[in-house]
Image (tube, rainbow, N blue to C red):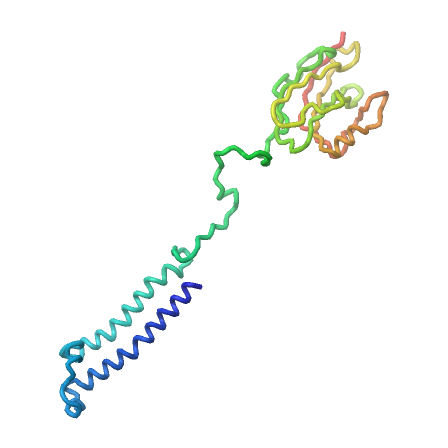
Length: 246
């Protein structure tokens, strides 16, 4: 809007300057020695001789050059401000419209407390033991790993029996509730007489609804075991182990 006003002002100044120039030219012509009217009006006024010189060529050149110079000055001032890519000190800078991912640089400062953690590839990464390791069922299986991206969920552990295909609860509380390192020993697995029986340790990410489902599973033979994982409960990691109970 400022540029439009400036353009109009420049054009108005140009139009205002033209009539006085025309009057000066007419006056100079009327007072020149070759003009018949000059004899009637007397000698040539001194101001015309001093301002325009001896001939009309300078007057015509002045008439032509002055508007061109004025238009050129207006163009030099306005064109950079009217072009889309031009910069100006009169207009505030506007941020480029781009994708936040493309335009936002990576921060080198630590995230403030409560900020959303970056997306994780795996919610739970088991670091030990290795798949297929053998353990005494009474002593249990020591499991270590790292948790990332829980976002309010908790990790529950169930042991899948390869024989009856039931998921057996290992505890009445979650094995992990926050992101970070996890360490838990899954003890009392299997029954007496088991010999290298396969169990699949199944880690489930549970929100409030899933937890409520897990806690209210109807008991079967005294255990809150199930063959189908409740809706909304998400398995995030499994570990196969071989259990023996001499």
